[in-house]
Image 1 (cartoon, rainbow, N blue to C red):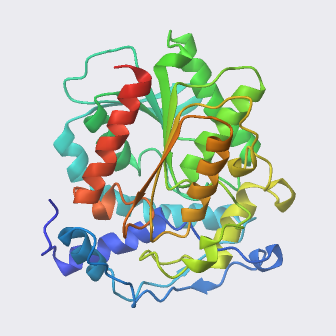
Image 2: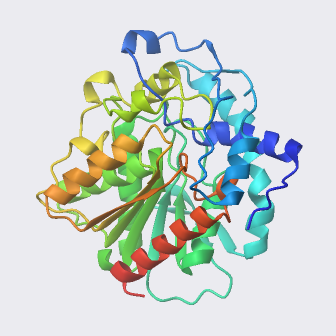
Length: 364
């Protein structure tokens, strides 16, 4: 269990880094505003509700987040140097997860699959069962990397015992949605060339990575390439147009700062032109799932602005007859399974259910 007495300084630093990891779940306004999205952005999160219905350790963590977040500059959607600079600022912060990674003692190899950079992560005492899990990280399509999100990939590798391939896909605005999705598909094709069948491949992603998983699978299906055995989506961002109800009703509920209209539009516009943002490969919630889709586990929390994305995707899959489970956690924010809430009751439960779901559909 994470102790309720975490040092305030450590919490403050972690809060700053998680600000960046999770600020892909923001509320959009108009595209015109996005073109000027270089303003200083600061969110007021001093009045976060602390529900008594969650674990004591999670209550204490939420209390620790009642601080004034720092002010950052959001680059414009057509400012690659600005995004690169921001990425350089935040990526080192995520190395604070390194002690947790070290405690798992994974075997990590930097390599390429399908001419795409990946991390090949094999848990301690790994035994080849012929199964593989492909991970796509979050970061609003513009930030972070396979290396900076190693804490998440290593945690899942350790809990499932699976070989995890973390894809270091190209970031927007230098890479638009069609190029990024093609990179993901290239990795899957390369795994098939290594001898894996699609029945032995599952995929998971968090936030923007969850949307990228779903969009890539839709394109694979449409191009006759088949679909993987199962998907796990943590707090998936699957509607870049920001039409979900909770983009408005929960915009102040998530304890993570920078959940602002301008920044989300900067992410979305950097990744896809407004005219493309309802394309199902970009915003999978608008997809047609009647032609098939893998069994899917969707996990999210009641505090996050992306709750509507999860609910709407669940309904779309369920109406198409796809095996799908919507697993919602009381009082939890965006991507609570790792970082802040890692090793809390809620995180442990969610990761355990992830493991159970993958075992069921991968058959290991």
